[in-house]
Length: 433
Image (cartoon, rainbow, N blue to C red; front, top):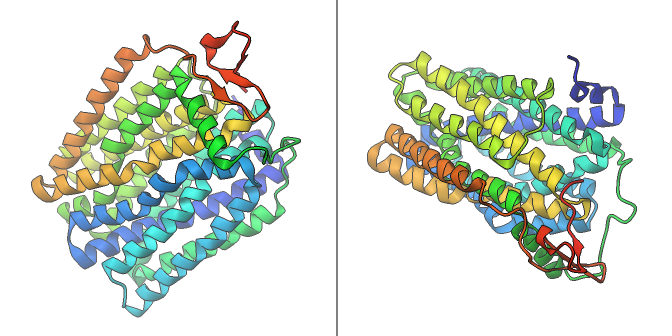
């Protein structure tokens, strides 16, 4: 059945945004693969790979929730243009250093930290912008279409990066990423926002009050807490395997091309899952519906960590890529449907914190374990911890209340509480869009 996820591309306005973001993602994936291989070539240290990942994600831990407040207060498209344009600077510095042969691991870490700060500001605004770009009835389809674009780049980008690095070294991948940021900015200049709220910018309260309001909304929603905790577990114990892929590629004696193929298999599974989502998967019936996909992701990583042969490892990565996309897309869709428009940026900020902000902790744990017991054992142990945590969380899902009577100071001169505050004379926070 032809799904409306693809009919959205008939809208020229959305198509411009879709293509601009797709090019930006393609460049970022190519840089990620090239940067990982460059660090491994310079240091031969799993801990250094993990440290680069920590430097990239540490700013997200510090800034993602305040960035969600900014996404609700200011023009989201302008924020995206600033962050995409600003990303040109660290990318070009890295490209020039790599071209001249003067790049060092500390320089890569510093530039990764700068890029991480821009990513922290960009992600909540990009997630929240979709509600102003497409009608509410098409929001789920837009999320699925974006997942297709993102994961298509994860399939094409690593393979292209591996071939380019084998022929010319990593520097061209960084220059390509810089051009992709420029393309994204040009696309954003042409994008219109026909579904922007009549009063998108609210300055009646201090940013701290808006932050407090968003955090209390998250605390007042049992299903939202369940979704964010599941993302937190996967982020801490499963996703940090990605920086260690060069170690596995080296262990299989596959070189830069092998690393590109491993990343491409991960992206291929992700693309297949995203296409399935876009072609008609029904909305999850409960927050726990995404937990099964999260457990499948962790099981696939456990299989990957124990694979004695390269083809088996590639198959495990393919399964892992599909499972993680199913998990994250379902969680993102459920969160978008569970928050009102005026809180969307803040909820997406907390989601970004759960997904990427805790990655420094996960990368430190997995990287330290890889240095001590080896990359295979570290990934296997992290996968088992993730499975255990998700099983415990799923066991408590049926007992999680739908809301708690937490009073939220409203910017509209009245109070709002969770579901259980209904009938008390307060205003219940809406559960859906």
